[in-house]
Amino acid sequence: MSDPRQGEGRKEALTPEALETWRRSGLTTTAAQALFQTLAPIPCEDMLGTWDGYGLPTGHPLDGLLELHGWRGKRFRDLDTADPLLFGRGRDVRAISPALLPHALVVRPPAFARTGLARSAVRLVLPLLATARPAARLRPLVFAGQVSAAMVYDHLPIIDHFRRIEHDRVLGLMDYRDMPAPFFFLLSRATSFADPDLVR
Image 1 (spheres, one colour):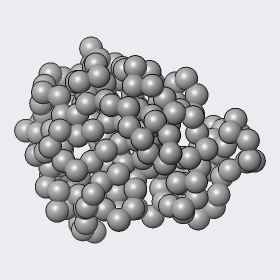
Image 2 (cartoon, helix red, strand yellow):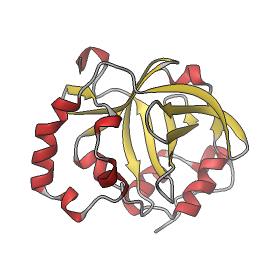
Image 3 (cartoon, helix red, strand yellow):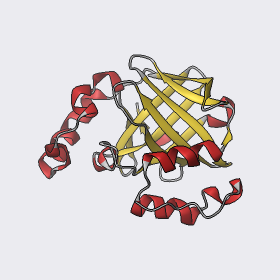
Image 4 (tube, rainbow, N blue to C red):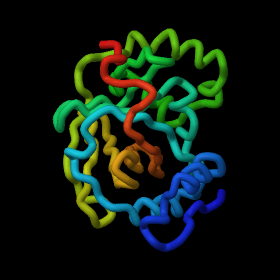
């Protein structure tokens, strides 16, 4: 996997070109963690709103899997009301309860999970997992020596840590107790859908 870092300065660490290179070619987990630590912390209040999301590959079992099944991003209604998983196609977007997902399959997704048959099955099941109830909260937490916004899941051993790239883009690191390595993802202020589009 290549290293898209363009220089040592923070401003050059994650340019749009570098992010696109990461998205296409991947990074090692070690390089991604080092990059994450170069970024500035972000206050919880700056995370409020709806965000588009996509994964950034590091050889993690979840690389590309969430998007394959329709993951669209995250929503933070207020500091105590967060929706970690927004799924859907087009403008039909729903908040999904993470607690209802089969986590044995999430932690070690089988090869079958990437097949067309699996996609069809997930498409049928997702409406049954939709919820209007929040599933996480925003809290300032210390991670890698800095205090920054983090999303703490209500019913799962997962914390998503956030660092600012610029005002409308954030790098996320999912720390899941049952996985040996973190999962990285990019959040951008939502443009492909907005709160009125969410099916409640």
